[in-house]
Length: 290
Image 1 (cartoon, rainbow, N blue to C red):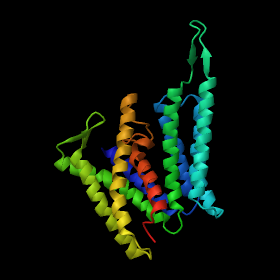
Image 2: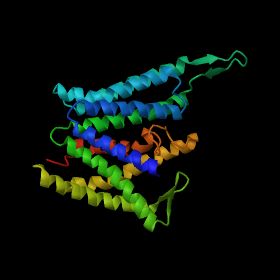
Image 3: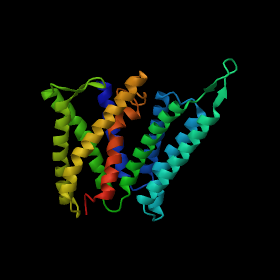
Image 4: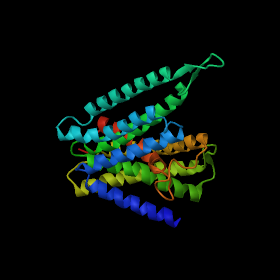
């Protein structure tokens, strides 16, 4: 427990420092590093990390895309819609590349005469989905910051949607939990905890909007904030559950060992990633602050 607490304190301190430097290249570079580590972890879980023909282009994609948002903002491009087009194009190219790998890795077995694959389509499909998930969501963490005028405050929505939801899911579940949510995936999560997370995340998001209005000239759209909060909370809980499901199916305890007491980057960022993707969509479609 002591190790877990110390690691948590270090993580929070580093995150605060990076957020304070978020107007500089430090922020996108840090996000890219995290994306690279996360891609390594997910490829390791599905058995593709040592397949360099897959892992190397996946790492390159993870390294480039989160930082591209910063580059676009610096050259005065629209750092949102054009970036999304660039991201979609990059993922499409990566998908076609994996198709080619799947086709040309198939060979004829000398004994049976049947076709066998060193890298099967099912295996590569799992790898593509996880790499796409990691790259898209870490890119969302980057792109949100560079939305004109409100990016830094939209990052606050991500942290509330992930952290407040996690904290109150735990405490309400511990105090009032009686009905298991999905015991086959996560035995400790309860329906009461999930509902508590939705409620307290909504209250926290509205309070956050009020605080932003006090310390800045921005005007919060409380309707958008209030409606987005339970969506972000639910999305974060789904991200947490999916991460647990993958680990159970693959028979691993943690995605990595980088963070003592916590596991790997994916073990700590599972809910933040899905919340970031949902936040990006909400912010681009409905302005939470004006």
